[in-house]
Image 1 (cartoon, rainbow, N blue to C red):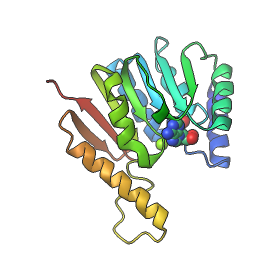
Image 2: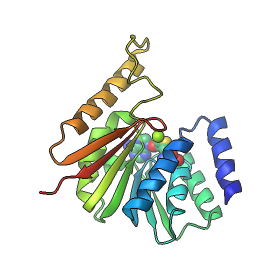
Image 3: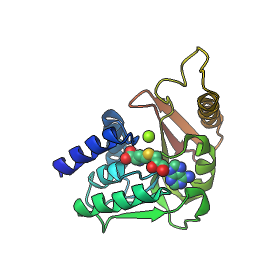
Image 4: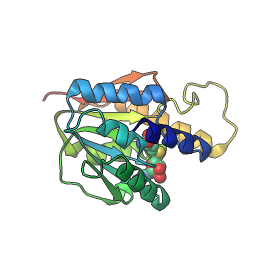
Length: 195
Ligand code: SAH
Ligand code: MG
């Protein structure tokens, strides 16, 4: 298993696939373990790295993961099969904004297009079990979110603006209480308030 994980890390590095950073994935796995999450939904599978890591936390964990890029989806299936986790990880090939899920999850991990985070959050919060948690990755966006100087590229500036909006959205959210962690590329942990 360690070999496969290593292989995936090397592949992602070579092909510039933004899988979770080591410290980030360790942090996420610790939360899964502590919160005793059994049913996990992931938005953004890429090649299956974080899905495999999450499923390995405990053998009674099931992961549903959504990926819209066909090449990555196929690679993810291959890696998951190699890891012998195809019974516990289900990858859905679609745009996450185009699918309605009826299942409930203990933990939802958002790690897809940064400009769509509010939409993902609003769409999938209804799929959260009571006491569940929503985790969002890349809120620092390689340090660009905290950077004070002007960002040259217009696209990048817009993207960073959207991440800032998402952070504000979480900070002002009435339903969820969010903590922000400077680990990996910046991770938010949002827990539903009791009503
Ligand atoms: N969670 C993975 C990395 C995901 S990278 C890991 O740590 O191993 C982000 C992925 O999200 C990309 O592969 C991209 O194709 C996918 N993605 C982005 N927007 C999406 C959307 N709206 N629906 C489904 N997948 C999306
Ligand atoms: Mg990420």
